[in-house]
Amino acid sequence: MTKKYFEVIRPGINTTFQDLGRNNLYHIGIPFSGAMDNRNYILANAIAGNKENTPVIEFAIQGPLLKFKGDKVNFTISGNVNFNILKKKEKIEGTCYQNYILEDGDELDILSTNKSVYGYLAISGNFDVQFQWNSCSTNTKANIGANDGKKIEKGQLINILDIHSENSKRKLEYINSKIENIRVIKGTNFNYFSDESKKIFFDKEFTVTKLSDRMGMRLEGVKIENVVDTNIKSEGIIKGVIQVPADGNPIIMLSDHGTIGGYPKIGVVISADYDKLVQLPPGSKIKFKEIELSDAEMLFKLYDMETKNLVLKIK
Amino acid sequence: MIKNISNLGDTALYCDFGSKVNKEINSKVIQYFNNIKEKKIEGITNITPSYNKLIISFDMRIVNFISLKKTIENLNLKEFINKKGDLIKIPICCDEEFSLDLKRLEKKLKISEDKILEKFFSRDYYCYMTGFIAGHPFLGDTNESLRAKRLETPRVKIPKGSVGLTEQFCNIYSSESPGGWNIIGNTPLNIFDKTNELKPNLINPGDTVVFEQISKDEHNKYND
Image (tube, rainbow over all chains, first blue to last red; front, side):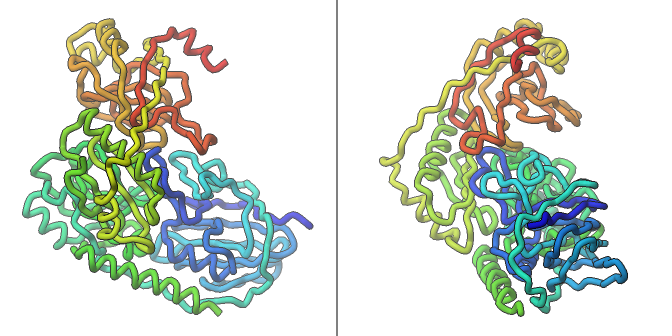
């Protein structure tokens, strides 16, 4: 069997291997990690014909330019992504949520994520990556996971272990919808904030700043005033927690968050809105809307069912 | 004992053991942590102990808040096993090169460098929790005369192995990281090993740490 691999000609801004993440390590200080946009991760693998927890390449804002060497390979891109396939004599403009074939010498140029942040590249097969605690998810802060815990770099070779499908016809009709309101359950320190600020939090717009990454999303807007204490005794945090440090600007914890934090929690983003939240690029305006736990649970059931139905619709 | 269980978002139980920070309350948190972990309850994805809270994350496809809350409330405490923590010796060098804030502490606390070190090394420390970054232990309690606030402007980079103080706690930076604790020394020991998947942390919640002062020469040769 001839060797199959990608050569990284341009790595992109923040390109990493990801899967569903790793459990049961918060107490050691290791976060969940995993693909930021879970639904798009699942769809990329499903269209590529892979098992659910197969490693994919996640990219942000600007994706990689990869040269394929070997016989051929199927691939799928999910998200809201502009990409081209550069063959010797032609350029094919790509469409998300469908399979394509790359042949020896072809280049895949993932130009940008359109009005969104994260996109996914799945191949019909497996990348040759390291697993730690049963997950390849790369946490670049702790250097854990595939690629020695680092971003994919220029010049490196990404080896492909095996491919399993020659079917390049699979596709899905799907358009990512945008989110206007982020639904939130009140946090455990909601009463640390002034009555005025509690109102502002659910009334006014906040802007996503450039200081946002896989660890957290920093927001800017009217300052949230704390009337009790700007610190709490450090305690565990989870994905989606909105902390407000002394400067009054909220930070939403995302997949690679520190496992313990000492800032008051004003709210927690509901699980059903998480995928859409992470896709908001810097400059986006968001508004928080308060909902009850029982509604959040129902919305998650709907979200989960919708994802499963999308997988069934792949033809 | 758990005083109250509320929800943290839609995927976690927030178990409150009170507002005080002491070894007695924390050892209850850790006892719950160890026993819940041992039981491998379906749907639990993470259990995070801290000073006086325990956060239990779960997969909403398998359980929900109300049902898991009942499970935790109905645990039979009489069956709880009391796991004894390990005793771990940590060598530290407090040479000028490593004790970045010792001079500053001398002024802040108004006691001499020698006295600071004497008081620091004369007791054992209890590990309340590990986290924030991988393997990073929160230890306590320090002598009351050694309690200082964090640096007003945190350092962008604190070297790996640095030992820091703040308020009633001390810690060890498991890897290079930003931070604001008052650094008094450095250990050559690797306290986090990601290749050891079964026991990546040298120090775990409930363990006791004894610090031993070593010379610069011993520090430099430690890993040879």
